[in-house]
Every structure is written in structure tokens, then in C-alpha cells.
Length: 386
Figure 1 (cartoon, rainbow, N blue to C red):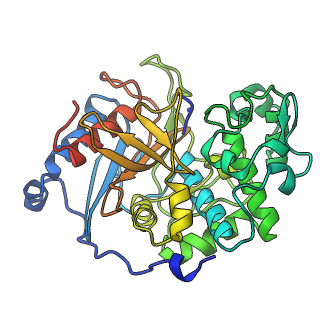
Figure 2 (figure 1 turned 180 degrees about the vertical axis):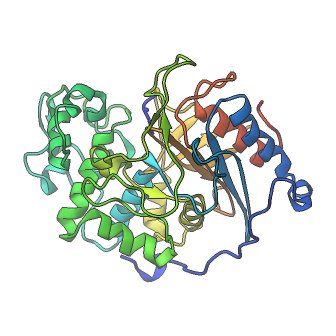
């Protein structure tokens, strides 16, 4: 999230697709009957009051699905956003990476108590960093104390290409944030290291492991980690617009659709769709991807600091307690021009995935997370926060 940005018998994937109810237009009587008009209203407010180019949301209720949208996929074409549109999911990538790590743990190919030094000798070293005291579990729940490399934009901008090794080097050139295990701080470096460990443990590219373990078995046809520095979004997609985090309402808008996401990689480089994310989180929350022991590990949370309000963090997943008191589970992600939220009930039966193709927000919201919270309120609390 922007800091503000093997399979075993008990863990085999259930590849039965949900029964799609089809996309319901915002004026459909079925939408009104099911209460989706409140969600549609929030979508429209995100555009008319928040000033965003476009927004989409897919709601899953058991075996039924509803899709709504407002605004446009591209300001030049005026096309509406669609269920097929792919977008950059930012830190929701971390959930996929953590899932692969936990599958490897279930297979006995690594342990969450293994250290970074065991798998990546000499990588986590210097300026108070000591990989021998950092476990894989600490990487996955952000208690490692390793500096967040994306906080050093100057260093990132000095290079045209960004390998995982370079990202790790940038991180350890700064002092550690705290002694491993003694605090919590969101650090993209943790997941770059986790991705490197996956590749070391399997001898295969991270993108291939995600595809073969998750995307293909679940039928996530729009979900993938780009290879190398490929800047394109393959398949149908919305344009991604950014103000480069300038808060001035009149700040210039840039098109960031073509983006070399290698500097985010395992920490936030993936691409997906709303339907794919609902299918993934439905299976994950529902216990159909991980065996019970690894499921318990993933959803054991620690308190967070200076992150999303009322949130706790597990292994690549988070819980958020809404203003009404309901708690939802999932993950959010933000990259230039694309902010996403995918959260649902703990059993995975009710889910909401939403994406905005802009990274600013006017109209009283501090950022798109305010809109996302209102959407979750509308779905899980029967009310809108606006």
C-alpha cells in the first residue's frame, strides 16, 4: 500500500467458478432490490465530488455478483470501465507472494522461522541490518525493521532498471528502522526479499510460481506479474492517471498507464481484475488455498502503526474494523494512477473489490481510501459514510 504509500490434500485449490449473475447496470431493478443503489451512489460521488476519472466495484454475495462503475476508463475515449478491465493492484501483490511462501512452508521446503541470512546470505547486512536475526515470518508481517526502499526515491531515480538485488541494496544503505521483532513498520523491502526467497527455494521465477500455484488453478485469467521491465498492461485495461501525489486541485494530471513496475516487483507489481481478486480472496478467506496450519499463520495479526486506520496485519493480509464495528479482511494497494481495495467477510462469502484509475481525491476525502471505506460501509454496515 502506498505509504501514507504445495498444494497438499488439505490445501488443494477449489477451482469451481462462482455462478456469475452477470453485470447489473446501475438502473437495474435487481440492483435496487438488493440495496446496491447505495454502493452505486458512492461510485458516482467518487467521480462527481472526488474528481476521479473513473471507479469500478464488484460485489460478491455467495454465488451472486454485482458490478458497478462510474466515470470513464479513459478521458480521451470516454469509454466506461468494464468488468474485464485490468489494472495495477499495487500491494495486493503481497497477498499472492505470502500465499506462495505459505504453500512452500506447507510442503516443507522452507520454514517461517528460517532467517533471511539462511536463504539470502549477505543480502540483509549493514547499517544495523542483520539477516541472521530476521525470520521469514517477520518479513511477511512487517516486523523485520528493514528500511523501506521506496522511501528513497532519489536512489531509485538514479537507475533505469531495478533488480531485486538493487532494491535490497538501497534498503540496507539506510539504518534499520528498529530491532527485528520489536516493532511494526510497513516496508516494501520485506516482500522483495520474500520474492527472492521464493525464487531461491524453487529455482523458478516468481511470476511462474504465482501463475502455476494461484492464477491458473483458480482461473484468474487477468492476473499476472509482469516479466522484467515490461511496461504494458496486456489485455483490456483502463488508463491510469496520476497527479504524482501533489495535493493542489489544479496539479497537472499525467498518464501513468505505461509503467515499468520492476521497482515494485513482489511488493506491488502485479496486474489483475476485480472479478479475479474477488475469486482469489474468496478462495483464500474460505480456506481453499492453504492448509489449516498455514491458514492460521496467515491470519494471525499484529498491531500496525502509521498505516490504515483501525487495521491489523497478518502475513500479506490485513483486517480493517469499519466505523460501524464490522471487521473485514483482505488487502489494499496503490501505485501511480491506480488504487485498489479488496476486502470481505472472514469466511470469504461476501466480498467487495474496487479500483479507481486516479491517485487523488477531492470533495472531503483525504485520499481514495476514504471512498473505499464508504463502499465497505455501504456493503457491510448497510450505510454510506458520506
